[in-house]
View 1 (spheres, rainbow, N blue to C red):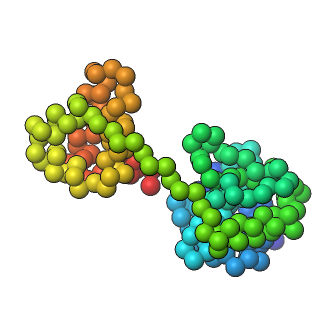
View 2 (view 1 turned 45 degrees about the horizontal axis):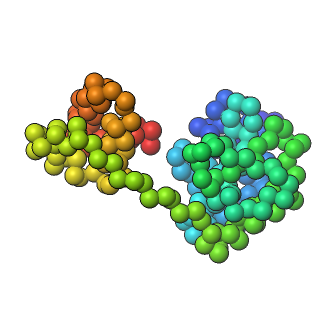
Length: 195
């Protein structure tokens, strides 16, 4: 008999974790969380707020906690997937179904749910305003570009400015400006292709 496939294809990168993800889903089905799809993968929410996600990668399958930084982690199993980048997300990684102890996993999930109900969440840090003299000159010379740039949210404006100003050489800054001008005029954000 065929095992049903987990509906997590894009977060199951090499499709070797179907049974394991079904196991995690069966555990999550015992909670009040609601399953949804976000960013092409399976996420569990409470009142519209992200609490848990699951997925499979090359060497492991995982359950991650969006505000895992607040979990007590008594078993010391949680890892920060991107140290220095990810502030609050934590993962619990497994390499086999045998490693998944339903009772322990549920304890972590119930704690995450309780934290969500209490409103515990990490606040994003305010990004320092970036000023780009090179780009400001460009905006002054091209009114259509300036008007198009103003239509972007402050966050997306920041992404463009950061992209320009992280270049060390003036020549690179200029080439980056030339690269993003058509995107801005077409109302395409710098990272829209990843969403």
